[in-house]
Length: 347
Ligand code: AMP
Ligand code: MG
Image (cartoon, rainbow, N blue to C red):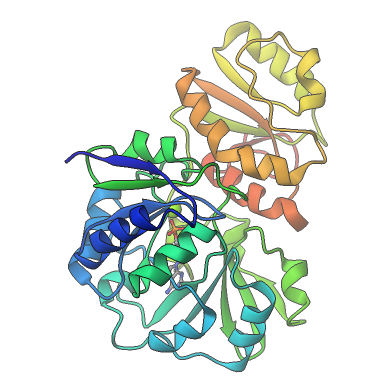
């Protein structure tokens, strides 16, 4: 199959109409969102959704997020509650996914047999317009091959899915760069299953009861059931072995300089550290305090590590709170919890 790429804005109505036709006829379309690129299918069409799993090589027990263009459209597919609307008022459209009890109309293929459905209303104008024009909810996971870093540009999607899908809408680089925050609601308690750009503190503005599922920071224990099935898979990983260095306990610069003498390694250093290393295989992540920039660059850097062909990559262990929690969660899983030095030490 030929994969066509079209540059789009929300005003590219002809192209969006064509994409909508494909979606309504059961085909897949990759599209930009403010988090990462999504691979969309008609959420009411089980066969179309099965194609997503095939194209990505995604395990069938990992459910999809359903995208809607206005929060009220959740009524068609799920049982809402007042807290859903309070959250929607604060964060929709935006990078927040809310798990709700599902209605019959959503096929089991979308939810991997769960009795809940994940709902998100994207803020990206192309994504939102596409869903609106299509007139159907769009099931869409990240548009990468399963296990690879999520795509934050149309090129990343093309690199992974060329020949497997008919259309990619290119809306430029993703604004945030990590996937949405995923939460469940139980009574008044919000539990974060996956951290994203909507932080725990931001959620506390709506409900005082915000918890973080243990799988966000820690490895799932043997026999432990994942609240969010996606959490049990190794994710985001470059081919090279990634190691995180807890620089509260050992010197990142000294440790990595030593490794550079004997290993073909990439170095994810802060911008301030660039001049301290030989200019070899450096993958600068942004300024130490600029968490937004680091988040935006994260997946592109993990892909770049593969492009430059290094065997190992060394990076700082990110802080596990506030805005940085999303980076910590992705990095700790990309490195399969290999942390050098410090409390998580495995080396
Ligand atoms: P992705 O589409 O690649 O961003 O992954 C979607 C994430 O949402 C995965 O981690 C899924 O496990 C999670 N998810 C989707 N639907 C549900 C659900 N009904 N319950 C819990 N987690 C879900
Ligand atoms: Mg994904």
